[in-house]
Amino acid sequence: MANSSAEQILEGLDQNQKVAAQSLVGPTVILAGAGTGKTRTITHRIAYGLATGHFAANRVLALTYTNRAAGELRSRLRQLGVGAVSVRTFHAAALSQLEYFWPQLVGVPAPSILDSKAKLIGQVSKAMSINLDAAALRDLASEIEWRKYSMLSMEEYAQLADSRAQVAGLSFAKNLEIQAAYEQEKIRMQRLDWEDVLILTLGLLKAEPRALSHVQSQYRFFTVDEYQDISPLQHALLDQWLGEHAELCVVGDPNQTIYSFTGASSEFLRSFPDRFPGATVVDLTTNYRSSKQIVAFANRLTSESTMGGDLEAAGGSGTAPAIDAYDSSISQAKAVAKSISEAIESGVPKSDIAVLYRINSQSEELERSLDQLGIAYQLRGGERFFSRPEIRSAVQLIRAEALSPSGKPLDHAVSDIVRSLGWQQQRPTQQGTVASKWEALNALLSMVDELPEGAGLKEFALELADRAHSQHEPTQEAVTLSTIHAAKGLEWPIVFIIGLNEGYLPITYAKTDQEIQEEKRLLYVGITRAKASLRLSFVNQDKGRERSPSRFVQILQAGLAQ
Image (cartoon, rainbow, N blue to C red):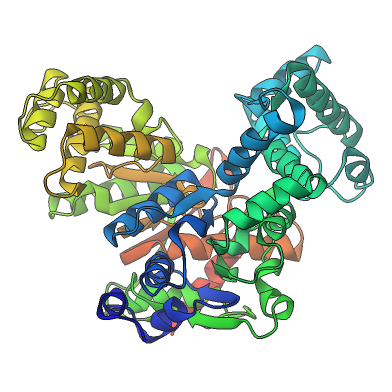
């Protein structure tokens, strides 16, 4: 029987979340639909396992896919009083092991990580008299990642000449030649890309029994977030870490599988109960994020799903989603910007609003329209918060003062530092860079409120360092513009999804039924980011070309008509 403090950890969880949190022995799979509280569930499960003595903190490894997600997990665990658990991305965990064992086995430090895959591809292709633009370099980099995550050697990849789509406008032979040159140049430079880190760690553990025994004795209790996005390479590495143990909890949603272009496959999630007979299977279907209308709208896109049930809305009714048609991308941008302006004037914080789209270029007209109305916005995937010059300066000053603190309360000390960099209590009336700088410094200052009472500059400096490393950025008072891929895991009260046209969503290169289904899942992810208000739109013309509405519009409009 768990003690009272352990039982308190379960307070506030719904029945299915409690079942998942209390499933501490053997394999567990949590099928967590959008907005069903998966992060809350797995953090409470870890905390409960520690409180009941089932888990040992130094033997728990929680794995996820992005530094931001890892930072969020760590933050949630700290709020539950858990600070000793290892929370890492697959790449960070593998790199740590590679850097530990490589000097012992090879006698020299492990090779360093390549700064930019695309940059090196550009260099080797230029040496071959092939000039590629930024988009082509990104496409080639993605293809390399897919090959490696799929665990294909160059020889095995070469056998796919007839089945792989053309990349960057290159013939398959030329694509293969560039990839081979990239790998050779990387070896010459003694550099690794992030896929190499996983490949080499896997090879090392398979070849060195002592290293494998060390790792398997270090970690015993595993939690894997976003398991629907696991690749064959990551799955093989996880198998090595796990060994004969079955203390594995995976959480995922097959309806949010949107990264197959990187080699991810939901098949590992789908087959989990077959691989682990007797595994505990928990369905989280109660959506705590979105209104009933938005949940019903989203469910229109998952009618063919074979795993996990439809979402059920826990929240009340809200505004019915709407689908708007516009003559052009310009008129769409102006209308969306006007709607955003009206929402802000009615008292909605800018940070409560997001505009989502399929590809980055779709934001151009919208950025112009927002600029014309003086509305601050931030581009996800643009300049990182902790890379901004004013934030770097503030962090340096905080670190310096932490070495010889003045004795001021933390909020006063940080306030003085950001004032020295141009922050003032009242938001400036100017727009552009002045407003952007103020918003960034104000967001930094607001982070003070997230620290425990009594924390000082030293603790704040450590928190900033941790969040910078994990890309756990604060919320800025600005409208968010983002691709749907970059918006995964986030939420806003008001969401616009623009450019719902054939060629964009689904994207032009989505040809097979499997690829079209992934595009549908991507739209589902976008829709389920919205909490209270959702507006979608398509255009009849874009950049002088006639555009047809997305085939998904008809599915969604049928839902609106019901």
